[in-house]
Length: 171
Image 1 (tube, rainbow, N blue to C red):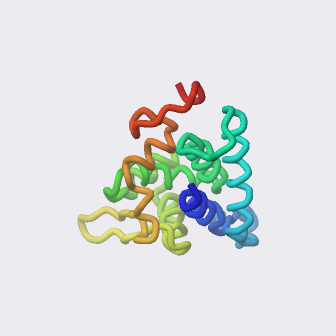
Image 2: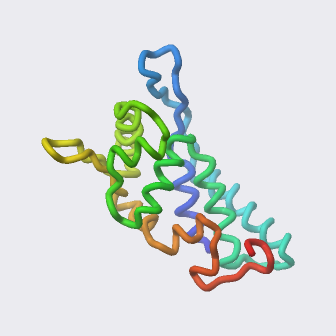
């Protein structure tokens, strides 16, 4: 349980940025980075509360989906959507066109900016488009564990796919 919370806390604590409407192209401005220990404490308390609500005094695998969902949904919206699309690809590259569709944007440059920013943050690797080849995005080696099918099932809160049933929580 602790290692899952630690991974999710680190994921949650990646720097957040907000669009700066003053800058042409709506670039991103740096925000203060959240310390992983703070995110870990918040996610730990969330998982403890989830266990208590379900009549348990100890943490269990059933508490992970709630914590994982909160960690991902608290990312900036564009990054969270692209991150989830990468998770669903289960290790396969996400193309620029797929990223554009995921973000529901008209211009490829918008999708490219998000892909480049995820690369800059060290979450994903962005491969620029070449002649006849689309730009792609894959998880950075440090984040490859996010492409496991079990993690995708956790984020979808479909515990039956990993053999765990939470007493009425997700059924």
